[in-house]
Length: 169
Image 1 (tube, rainbow, N blue to C red):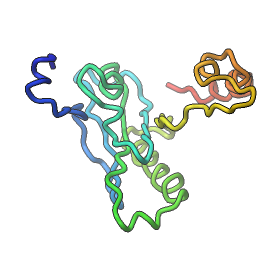
Image 2: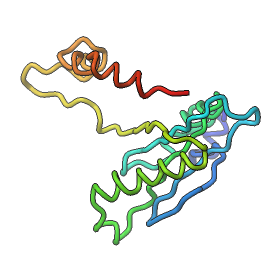
Image 3: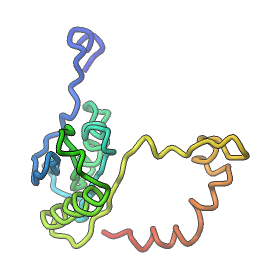
């Protein structure tokens, strides 16, 4: 979309990568993005989980600026949870409903469709930025770059070994 086209119609056309809802329950749904014409390059699906306050299309913004589109174009089998719009009955949901039931169910549906036993979860939440404490904490940019005290926890051999054992096809 050119800048001139955008100025004529500034409404964002987000979430345009083709997908189908493969599971619906209590206001949320699991979206399965259509595979590229060449087929899959990777057998293991990816289940993406946006934060509860974000819409699913934060991972599929605009053509050419979409993580979902990029993954599908490279042969990944992509699933994304769309949490939907909260309604009155959602006030009774708790963390167990979301983390254990809904995300767990999404994993089961995705792995069944893909014919796999396991799938990695890719979570997205802007609230995951390291907090800045007034006392001797690295700035978020230093912590993320590995130049602060948080580096040891993120680069320890234990977590690296665990990550290596989870990598599959």
